[in-house]
Length: 397
Image (cartoon, rainbow, N blue to C red; front, side, top):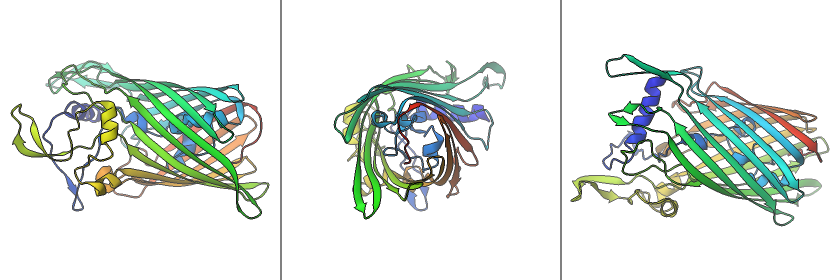
């Protein structure tokens, strides 16, 4: 089963550059999903954010801020900390595909913080076979990304961060797929992130904090899984932006509400006609040529959808979450993630719980699909272990 899943994924990657495409309709709407290489980079790695609809661009800083918004690290309450997260993948089908995530941060001075993280996606052990079904070897396909960031406070309310990332995706370990020799895909990328936070008095007699964050992640070179590919494939460059409001209900209780808005900054697949150009490529009937460089592709992604403005609006996805804390010890979380039917149709609710005691923290989350489409994380419990060392003050949001 795992070999079939893997080979199907690789075959899809290898044909991303073919101009002709087959269109699929669902509920009367034409599907036009934006595909990229290394989708690992878009998987929420930690259980706290996983309990809030897989959002966290403006949530209060923690050890796992790297994925959501590294600019939050400069506002973190502790001197040093680290976290380990584990996420089973496709648990309904197999039992040894998983995502592991390790993060670390260290405050340099009151104004700046350094942080790093490593995510590792394993497809377990797979036996490859030739065209006759004879085994040709047992391999352990995997993907990983290592990143580091420097986050700094620029004003009493505003922080900025720059992160760098090394990405390696080795899914076939040199095997031939559909007659094409494959190789590991390698890319280097960067994030630019901002975070703003301030205390507000919008509610009479109640302390409150308002924050917003922005993170443009995975700005990096295209990736290829074969030297035979004429065009390389985009990695998932993504814009994430959103606000948070935290209400201090009393000395023991607080509640936060947050929204993440996401958009892939990657060209939208156009609609091709059956006619061809003199060079044999298919003529674009609607939309724009997706075979462009990274920066032009990021700009083009705002206006290249073949369906026009309405399709561009469908390319936004939303993560809505809430988090309740009691005495900085117990947290209850809930959330909802929405993606349009024509752009992937991921729609699911999430639940989560968190416990903090001294320097130790433990988070769990659970995903509940609300559509008939299968979700790789359904019926799966994710967890994170967090250690915060040298705590300066308690945070309840």
